[in-house]
Amino acid sequence: MADEARASPVEIISVRADQSLPLAAMANLAFASLPIYRWLVAAGVGGGAGRAGFLDSTIRHGIDHGEVHTTRDLSAVAVWFRHDGELPSAAVPQWESAAAIGDHPDRLEAFLAGIRDGRPRGPHRFLALLAVAPDRQGRGVGSLLMRHQHAYLDRLRLGAHVMAGDRGSRRFFLHHGYRAFGDPLFTGRDAPPVYPMWRDDNPIDPRPSL
Image (cartoon, rainbow, N blue to C red; front, side, top):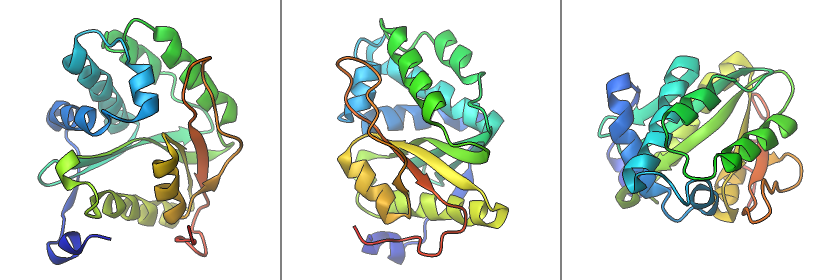
């Protein structure tokens, strides 16, 4: 955990609609080397601007259908979709209307289908996006956002589902009380794996050994 994050308290706030686009631009930089993100938007229309549009739609959907948190300086964002047993169908038209998913919309469709097929049953939250600005990574900011939402979910007795984008992300989520939820998922012939993970509501040991 970062000493700097401990020494300088980070204020967590709910995201407003007018903050969505700058947060999307930050997340686009944060995800530049994430294999599944590069695969999904490999031929993104408009380059960086187009990819930011993809993320902007994701954040805006979270504002309308879940919870979205950031820091006062907009250096990180966590987007949680509310699920009452179904993947919100409104997410797909929003992403497609952004014209930001590249020349391979089938990739996003396959990715969403994989989430739908493997989703947990019953009410829960789905962590659609967690990003920290490159110059703030490794300082505990992402962990603060996670603990903030987990405290809320524990009060509601709700579990949480996430697709970890690589092995490093998987270790991060294990550290925060998640466990494997099925086998690694490959959503296309040349797609990198993602790792379905689940956190129980109000877990006894929220920080297991790595």
